[in-house]
Image (tube, rainbow, N blue to C red):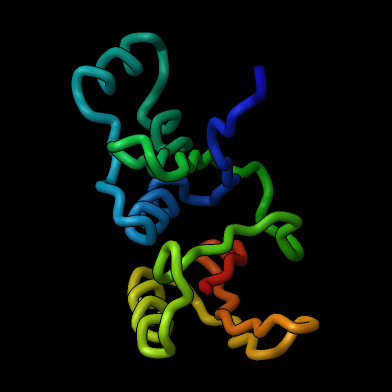
Length: 142
């Protein structure tokens, strides 16, 4: 038996805000602590602050990655040691216009463009955007 990926977890200053951003990136519906789950969690001793300290971005069909957001105890410092590569057109290389349109959509959601990478790595061309999410986590759009 092999292990399977459960969550990709982010530490965040504002977990619900970051969950809404990443839900928008992947086209997931926003996930809130809806009833009756919210009441059950509060009745178990959790507080509204506890609920605000965690959030999720989840594909309702279960096909895409599940992202979990947990309140960070310290501010982000330095560069990520791991980042996500997002495909503008899954399964194929995007045209220039498709890449630009998706970059613009992500910026409208709250991403920041760091730089456009346009180079060759050996025989392979590399053309992608390096971006940051609203809390400064780096990711690439290819």
